[in-house]
Length: 252
Image (cartoon, rainbow, N blue to C red; front, top):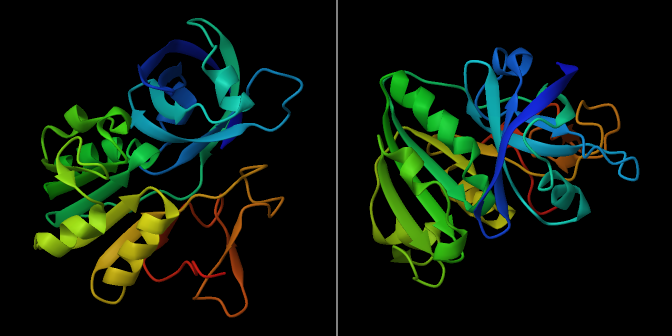
């Protein structure tokens, strides 16, 4: 993990307020694993903290990140042009473990979908059967359905504007899905519902999100309460962002 200067290869608006950026970053691409993230500078002296963004795709010499404009930092990222150079710290955190010859269920909600793109690809390359549930509030916020073409994909939206009407748990209550390993990334309420449903029953991993500052575990600004350490906390940027089912205490 190191700070590297990366050139912007593209930065495209793919849906309302959602952008996909590709960075020439061979040093990061050669080390990165599914589920890790980077801390990317805004190139703005008024915003000193880098922004943590999950890695969506890992290529031979580049990485792809996907982000939604939610504040001044991500708005600044959206202004980057091809050829701009940006400081990036990464790869950071612990990613998803990979298995062989299993049936893997991937569940992505909203902007939690991008980290599952590379995961699905690598799981498929390892001989796994991959089933994917993609959820969003409405069809305009659903992304990357086409990126999972080698998997069995089920789409759901809260308002029913695309696919099944309802959330992930509604879908799982109505349709019986058998699988070996669960991977999930998305809103905390979705992760909590999946965790409560499958902990102690299935092997599984969730990518948990918290506000971050340093990204390397030094500041303890992104801790989450855990069930596995008595009166203890874990750093999402260091021990996470991927945790086993049954680890995160959502009630704290």
